[in-house]
Amino acid sequence: MPSPRKYANHAQRQRAYILRQKTAQAAAMKAKNMPAASAIPTMPSTWKALGRQAQTILQTLKDEMEAYRDERSEAWQESDKADDFQEAIDRVEEALESALSLEFSRR
Image 1 (cartoon, one colour):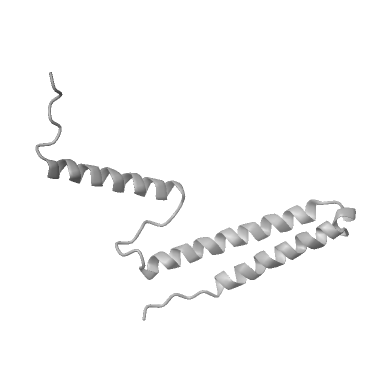
Image 2 (cartoon, rainbow, N blue to C red; image 1 turned 120 degrees about the vertical axis):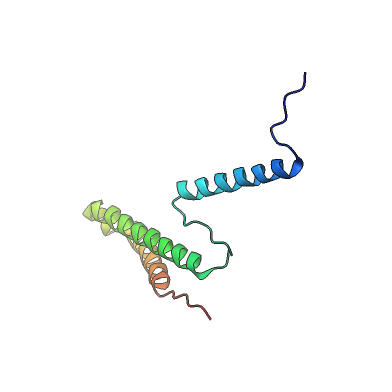
């Protein structure tokens, strides 16, 4: 005996599928702490949210790297590895400054 039809026609089945996909995508974005997708993917509001997120990530990375460096021994802090690590911190700081200088305006 065949199972009963869940949807009356193909259009209803397709609508239900699309709704499930959108719900799953929204849940995935929320789980990743990403802003909700705008109706138009190139909306500046989405860019602003992503820019703020990039700034937060870079600031956190810089703070964590500096804390790691400060926790090392004095001998390590005077080594070549420390110099290389400081260069990496400087590159992160440059990226942070670039992210902070971003401005999105509608034209």
